[in-house]
Length: 433
Image (cartoon, rainbow, N blue to C red; front, side, top):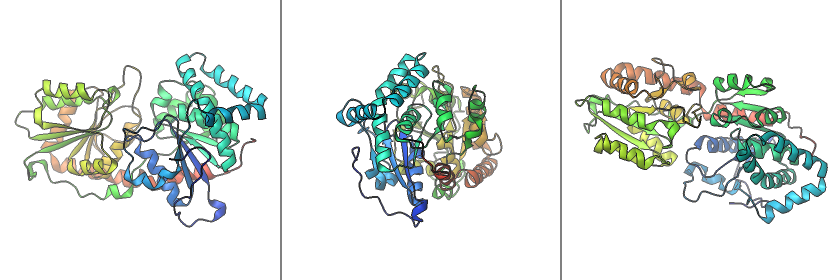
């Protein structure tokens, strides 16, 4: 990884006129984070287009997590800064000396926006020095645009860096980042060149916020790579050569909002004569509790917990499966899904999907058309959908094929990343530094 101020040689890029090339910086909270594949694939696409993408992560490097193989060629453009270190504090002090009035106004703006949420305000105060230093780095390196991948702290850091470095910025609105807290959300939106929403649901939500600049909202979906949409359809469950029957998959974090306990309850409700196997891919705070629940329900060897896996391993799991289940719920904290990218991946692979009718999910999964929608937290509904799929495979296969076509038409990362890059590179005029 690079340290601030150290610029290494970039990888070979596609042919692009020098005047069209842009240095694009994307800000995330954590890196590597195996569940944020979509963000890393965007950077790979920017690089293929001929741009120079960089990735800044706010929190320290996560040595316990994995870097996806497809992203390894861009690791030389990944960097961070300490919360309290000379490489953060000295640039911050230098900027206060350089522009004291502007820095005081920025600090006051941040305090005023977060005084009702002191915990969140403390987090902003902690990232403030490194975000200021990041802004100076952007100015020195000629970064053309900064994008916060999430409307919370990544957008906060991008906003501060933009104000300091005179660089245009934008951010993506996913789900929890706009639903749980709206502290400074309108202020950031008013200062941003644009706000990218991953769903029409989010656009409706944001449009109801007083003062939100709706004219700056852009609907740009997440997506999957084209190679993930060419998988042959699986054989019918009753023709499984190994006798497993219906192969059921879950991929995602093992946390409350994912609702995995309801999937386990649904599996326990399936008829005893029905043949099936399930794989749970992912890790999280509830891993031990969910494994204990599976044992208590008597699911035994039928449910396999595989832990976190790389993008390549997840793709293999999709090819193994007949159906992906995404049993999302609204967590007690208010956290809720946006449109899980894993749904796009499974549908791209031509697999049947069952998902909760929450947030923007019905924009992708239309009940009986491209998948099955269930009420959030309703295990019986999930169990019924699984039985429908196993009992009428020709219909299930037709619905899965329609879902695959939906992905091929609207959810390819190459097209959606190109739209996002175009939004970042249009009208590249800088803000006054």
